[in-house]
Image (cartoon, rainbow, N blue to C red):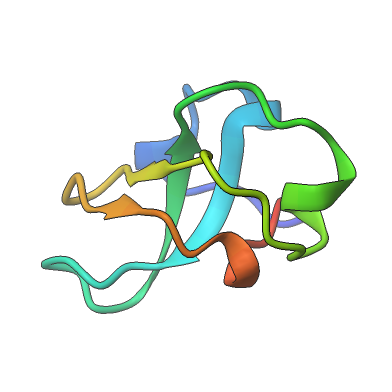
Length: 71
């Protein structure tokens, strides 16, 4: 497993997802889920409405969970 960057190191592992940030970053970044994930739907890319993640670098709010990837 690869090491997480410093900005994501203190976030509980089960709340981390990798997103394509469309905010100031404009790159692949680690984000924190607002609520604990339901399990398989969010983590396999199946649409699961109501879940959002905040980019840990710029604060962008991602709602397009079809492309999220868990560590």
